[in-house]
Image 1: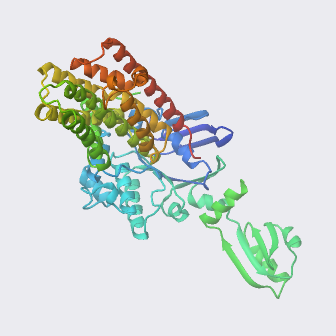
Image 2 (image 1 turned 60 degrees about the vertical axis):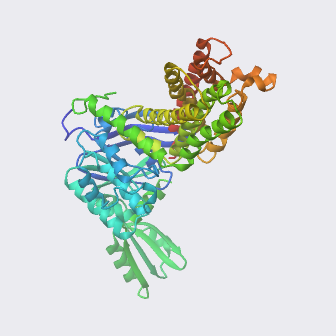
Length: 299
Length: 262
């Protein structure tokens, strides 16, 4: 194996995947670096599951290359260094938590002890219970325990907190932070953008099978760092649209709505030109706004 | 594919297979809708037709014929349901996908399911043997008891392959009904419930179509009551069915795997 600092842990190189006439992924480049938590975001059907499927070796790319720890994802020696929690995978109802954990630990060369798994995933007192008898939140925690039990270098978490209450989600976030601190790299997909904002070192946004943004949370936010300015004014939208710094301006239900690269010069000029301007609002785009903006742009 | 590596020696791989088999067995053992019919139906039918209605205590002709055929009937159910229903459900629930993503050694789940089916088949075989010995008055040579046991245990293979194929073609909800539609008529038409000699001629004539007929002829050969075709023919037919169904199921699973959701 080559030096870790150079070789990405997992990599899609110009990967495309086509189902019949549907292009699920188009020429996607994605490389997961050591020690990072990467959040893969995108609307439903954007190609997140396909990207994960390729990285895990579940799917074969129509074109392009896939590497997992420098090898083919089909290679067992590569998969022994990863952990997986899939959104759509349910475990067998009539096995006990202890049986499932023991079996999954046996797949790995140097697994965590049962006790450590129980502590990290919050499974106290559940080892003898059957999977079917657990609550939805407890089942998610069992799936998380199976994902981390092999001391993975790279962990795939596909919508890990769906269906969890606030407290359980916080608990899982703590466990995820602990793993990252101990050097584990994570690929996270989530519908909760605040989750990505709270946990991710890096955010990759895909839409229609293409990467539309890739950077730190701050960078992706900055991609759409324009401010949204809203006010009631008699100045026409057409005139404002010609100002420097202004990207768009339009009137929406009586409000003048302006998207500008920075707010201050625009607001200053607005106030100067219309003394009776009122209901002034300036918003900064968060990750949610950035996400909506990015995925709309590409549509 | 690097299955064995320095940090993952053969002993560790074998342990995966054993734990996989144990989990699979416990899973089915805790599923009453599988265990109760699989273990009780052949025994109840055998008691009814071989012991009570057979009425041949002492002269073990019918009782030994039905010992062989109800054994086949019992292990067919174990294999068809044990594979057909569980795989269909596990496929639907995404469990098979997760297993493929995990570093499970290749074929471990298939091994586990086969071991589970053979385990239950040996139970069916033992229960029938006990009834035959105690209530039906069947007397066989030790090699015959052992051979019958071996036929029952190894006989799960073709039906496991058929079950696997069914599981790739229908949903978990539909699979029990579809398996029953195949299982019960096939058992009857190949003379497992009552000898072909007392059924209409066309049924006996068509019987060699069914894999269960060929397995039952091997079992009947052990108890000395087969119709006298060569064992090789039966073995060849069963091997071919096993191979064809297994390959079709594999092909179907591979193509299902590549149908993602985006």
